[in-house]
Length: 391
Image (cartoon, rainbow, N blue to C red):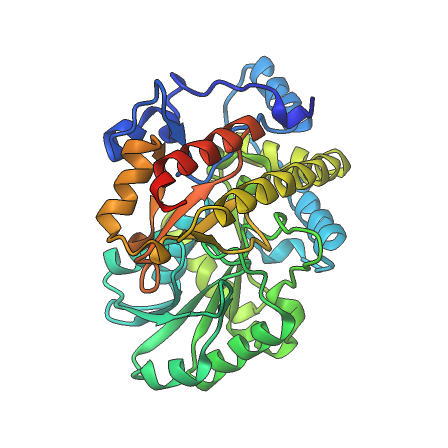
């Protein structure tokens, strides 16, 4: 049995994913499957748990300063895993990456400044931007035979000149694309044409499947660093999202000074346990665990895709990255209410609704495959039964 096959009970642990799915989706945790919130049903790596256990047993939860171990670990990981040199002076720590997006909006834009999103895209980006009084321009991706592509010719005609910031999701959530170097270069050129600051969310950069290579945005075009802010975090890779630790990495000195001023004004302080966890995770032990995770997730991906392909009218995008399957129900001929009811009420699976990801998500549901394979198989069986009349 694989390490990741081991049963891991999360019900009754205040898990949003498992203990709140009935509140939001009407799916009981007694017999339902939680496949919505983007965290995994695996224990974090032993190196992370050992480090946190050590901190807990020490017994003091007072002020700490994990530097330079923390920034050294980030530098090692980015260099060894992604070929990207990160200077310690470029790094800011935030309370997760949604907080980082909010901080960037606050530091680099004013109310009324527009934000560009390539949709469908992670739903929190639009939510945070609109809450901050920054109108959102949704530039729809092209669904080319089940694979998203960028459409810069169209997007050039959509912008009004009031947009100041582009949030890029690389790798892409929810479509699972690993953007090519050429596509990222086009995104950089697009930002230059429209004088946009790029916020590149690369939180899924470690979850990349065989045959694909993620390229960090700074390695695409050195000339874009004066308008680039990088966002990274260990949360998706190591299942530590609840420790709310993310990193804003800014190479350009002028941008870095602006962000530092806002961070100082808000008196931000990092979470010590989150920093301990990152330091332990970004290590050779964490790297070996990540490699094993990817082998396991690849098996889940293939199992799920094969099952979806066997149900007429359903189509899952081929994942190049992430553990989040994006399934199109347009071919069923059903309206959104009907196919959603079949998944949630008949199959008893809680999933994310496509429209929350913006334009282009109307006929989709997002399924989290970061769970034991037996649960993925059970979800496949339930979906076959729920849509049996189509087969």
